[in-house]
Image (cartoon, rainbow, N blue to C red; front, side, top):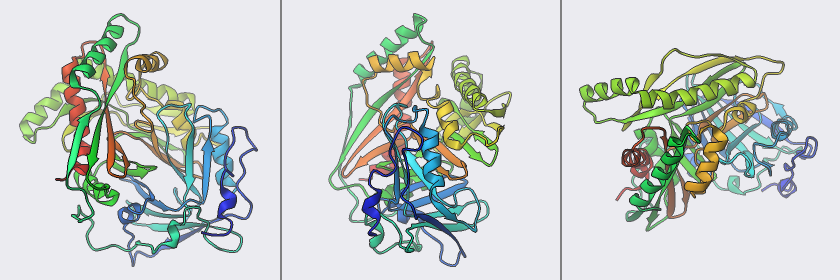
Length: 448
């Protein structure tokens, strides 16, 4: 740990512009890698690092140089300014000049917009651009050229070079005995779903996303690296993440901003996949025709489009949703594309604030749905279904919904899955859908 590390404790906190200042003399030194010794990002993530590996860009950060705290959460009007000022206060030596180079903050943000949040600028950030194969590393150094790390993690021997195998591994350290328990009996959860449906039938709310939790206790601590490798093998089209104990494989892109180009891909509407091609095609065709599913999907798309437009994005919306196929389920998906206007355009973080929470994880109308959840769900979601992602000093960034995820704490894991209740929903069918969604993480964690 560098001598300057302790000076950074609490340095990036505040709730008013100008209060949050990064200590002087910090520089982000970005250096391109030649590809001779490829970096195994999942192995780095196994060291308690920060990982966000999407189909476009893969980032793995080690150590903590700066922690940017938002005591009032992302709902604080000053939050975008605090984040932008903190990143711009770090000088940048960046010959790469691509999204994700220079100083970058990563975070798993709470579902509750008003809950305290924090973003981390890693002491060392390894990045790989999937399409081009370009890769680079950024280190935060002090005025003496020493890497600034408040955790001491970088004092350990780095494990950056590939170990030879990138697939799922078996290791004696991994747990081999598990207890899986639903936090609520099935009957009680279905009863809560029925009470929410009564609110919907009474016309007080149109859609509510009700979640349920499953707890897993193992005989030994979970090995994060191995769980991530299994998720990578099972769900290659999803974004892998491991930040602040929350790990998962999200299928849902909340929003990406690269330059002025903006993309979001809201999901809503789900059907199980059987592995039989003809049966799956028929189920997907029914999914696209089903009024309940199309209605639920439309809620989400409209909310995302309206939020982006309020943030100054010129949006193009496809006329009909497509099918997103995963290993065990298919979803209705709409890829929304746009161009961020304004000078400067809204940052990726500002776009997150404009659309989170979407009806995909909260409901319609949002305020009424959240109040309904407070009454009937009685579940602390933490960072589940919150935004997970990164932003650099240019305002570029990529944020995914923290779904298909688990909070892992040593030998315990807490999994949450949610379903959208609308008029015509059946509690038992919705319970079955949560079981499908929970299977994504159970298959990676529970390996007897």
